[in-house]
Image 1: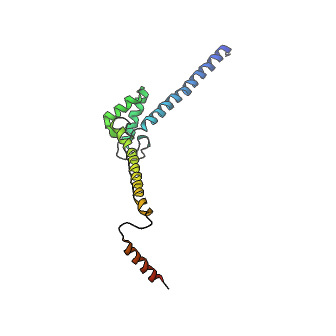
Image 2: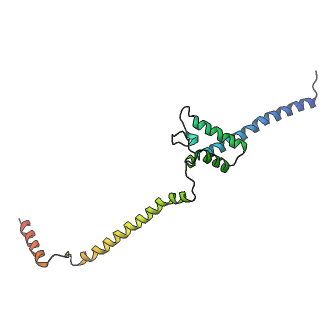
Length: 166
């Protein structure tokens, strides 16, 4: 049996199309997997381990495997990140967030520690400056602390001089 060049070319072309279909299918699945990992990194595993969903390392953790399966199915359907997030929040509540959303009241909660740090630093600096300003005139008054009479000061100096003589 002799094969014509056209038949050989058709056979090679068919083989290339079949091989390229397999090659093209891998990046789509890899893209879905990377998107699922990226979205899954924003959720906590609900088994109680306090780990991020994509990093839960409990042997046989059925919670993380079911959550990841649900996430993969949603990504395969083409659901947006917002739709997936809303579905997880409806199912598990806001505790599913690995990091609370930075909006509304939670934005206030995120910013308060920095605000308190700045206000506290300003108060400490103000108090230190007031203490320094108050004690400076007392020291400048000839080195004599206020509230001590000159007679008592002189007696103290004489006593120190007697006690330190050799």
